[in-house]
Length: 498
Image (cartoon, rainbow, N blue to C red; front, side):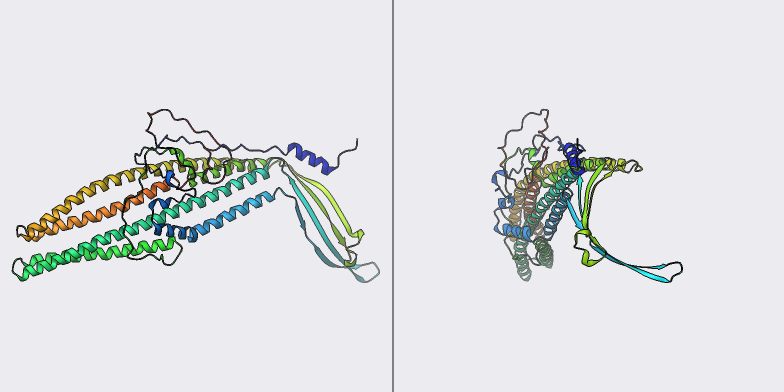
């Protein structure tokens, strides 16, 4: 029986062993999650969001939507993130190229001269030319899955980079919204101070007139002037803080100036309020958790890559080309040459290098598992913190409204009693100072509630495609069962396997 040619024999070997892939198969992490969050004022915004997750439209603010569009299009950090995604995509393509046949050429030309001396004769010189145009064709037989595992790792790393971009997009959008509402909250405080300054100015005029009429002493006038100056100091500080907020907004939007009206509309109204009972499963939609899971997958594939270093590798190499000592004979048939042969690498002793490589890959995989677990726990904490913040700020705001009503009434009565000469101006000053503080506190609490609602939406991963189920009463405590695992999750917000 005629033996198989070497190329055919190696091809058969590749078909027989090529399906062997070393390394453990990826199992997506499955952290235990609570059935729902402990907070009773969960912002379940899914029912109100469109398919693109434009969560900022919940606030029904056209200026915010305009700024958000500009920021997501022009923010420099997001631009850098897109470049990193392109880099990861190129690395994935490079990893896949290892599974392709490689063809290269290294043309060369040399000229040599040698001095020779013969017995009984003089010295003569021998000159020689060598013209070569070789072509090398090579292919690595992926017997143990090194290339396949490398591509698997590169693909998971690429997907992780994409999710990093999604996470940064969510962070930038949140920063834009928070900065915008902080700026509008400062404008609301500025309105309060403007009204207070007008009232203090009227009080100063009134006390000056009463002093001229001999009804009050100079102390009342000095006290009124002091209170007016104090309000003017606060006004200057608020103008500074509002300008800094506008500058921060301009940076987030990728521009030198934000184009905002310095005297824009102050913050008013209430943040979106939605029902309770938000299921913890929606954390699967957080891009940072998705990125952490993809890195677990990449590290798992790298274990297989490290394991293949301890196994034999076979490269098929073919060389062909033209070589001649004279350039005019280079294209003639006698100048042609070729050869073919496999190259086998058998690791025998490496001083423990391959074993250390496997251990390093396994340790890196364990580290990514811990990072994933920490990311999930951090996400749970951020949601719970946001729920606590949202609920507490709502309770504070309700109490502050009651306090403001009472303080307003105290200021009115104090003013009436002073005008009748029943009390001195110190009591009026105290009541008006308390009223100013109460009005500013209301503006600050309103801004804090908007900020808390934004932080909750960020903690939940922003928008998502599918509406969540309607809120249900919390069931009695019971043993939690872990969700089913999914292998090889796909791209975007429905990606993560648990």
